[in-house]
Image (cartoon, rainbow, N blue to C red; front, side, top):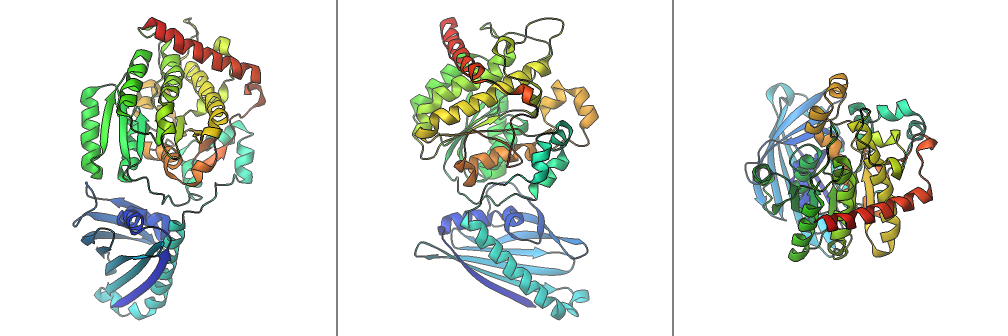
Length: 471
């Protein structure tokens, strides 16, 4: 048997440290040897919960299967693990210090017969790994990370169309992930609102936020789907604080009704994620007489965010996350062409891209206007993700790109980061892809003028008022 024992003191509460460490999937953020981790059993972490952790070796990798054998909330976690070379028991205890927590980590390795003869030679390497892992955990819990600095390659890509587009792929995510910092900020009990949460990016976002203990309000259109989403998320994450609100966000009457219900509840909103969206082919109008792309993708988040602003202001450090699209890079802001007319040349992709360009401009305007009020507003684009929306609206695009598309979880990662990470709250009015700031334009001809930006704000305000009149 080989025994490792390391101690680290961190300036975080035992509850925060326990919540972070007990979800053993976080090992990939602080253990240099862990290259992948997943939770195998549904529900909140409890005795019997199983995890699978893939660890790197000098020439290959091993997969460890862990089972939680003992839990004392905020005090103790014991896990038993096994792989083809050894069995292991990890005991991690937490004791309160003035202004912080002491982490006591003990690992006992039991080498299997074929490995027992070389266990002595492995001890020095294991001890080094143990020290590095606990030091990595302590560093992660400091939660003092800078924003990712764009590399020279990023800057070149932002000036050239084809390199920039390549970053939207799964490969782009894998490259970006190498620079990710741990997300250890606690969002437990923080109230977060996510629109369009029934599938794709919205569901993946809700899943990750629920796993972190956030109090969620998910906005969806269909009651049956909403009830299943809530049930699935509660069962999977063990988080009971998930509820839904029904609203068709392409109808401003529904948006206004949602705003009134939420204001009546009076619950502060820490994070609002404007994610709901769809690409419409052929062109259609809502029953309120609005072109559907404009109504859902731009006017709806405008009205919703403006309407919920009083609840955002009630939170200590509110954030708004707007989901845009790489398609916006092909379009400039032109209010006279914002609503694509019903002609033979109509393209749902063009209509979608124009609304997302306008939403990016709106993000920057809100960030500037609300800076003094403490509301952080940023945008992200998910790259090319294999979502139900892409499969239904862009079947030919998916057929061509299916081998390089990201998963919904990979596409949603930056949404979660903008909602959770401490460093993400230090900047406003920016566009992020894979947790790194990127240019909002690839070519100069798409840059908007100040006059056109002001025209957009007047246009949105007048259309929100017109919608009130229609009601």
